[in-house]
Image (cartoon, rainbow, N blue to C red):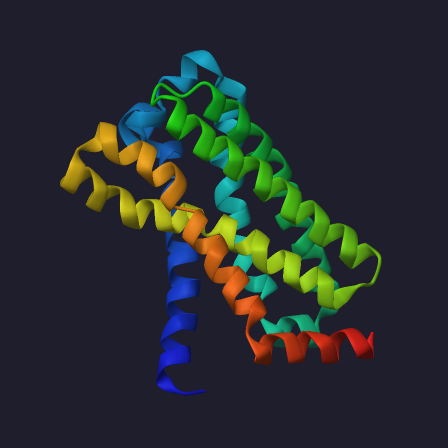
Length: 209
């Protein structure tokens, strides 16, 4: 593996695990201190909020392990159990995220962006799991790449939001990041899936299953 793929792999793992761990800071600091923009949900939708902010980091932390080829090939049972945990975390977090998106104080642009993210997150993951259960592994991997791109929105949101807030102010930047955190991720995933080498690898996988 050349230097650039190694760097990409390192960043993928590091950012996923670091953001997942940092996201649980509310357990020690509370929501008001650690996540001020989310605090109003404590009064509006407390169950949805706590379900979302507890299980979203679980999904983010498990995601890189699902792309670890060595684990997948040598310990397929572990891969499947981690996949079940990933799917359940998204079921809980995505459902909670949908309801808190509808009750955000940030306006309709932010609400629609985050709500659509939750719906697509749930849908892509459910489709991927359905295909795995049907042993359609090549198609399963395509849909789980889409799911992972949406899971990674937790990372891109935290990278983009400080820049947007500094450039435009938080009130303007937050609705923008509600879309920017996931739409480019999904477009990149689709581009990766359309590359000839990716299509060839998935075709070979499909023919062998």
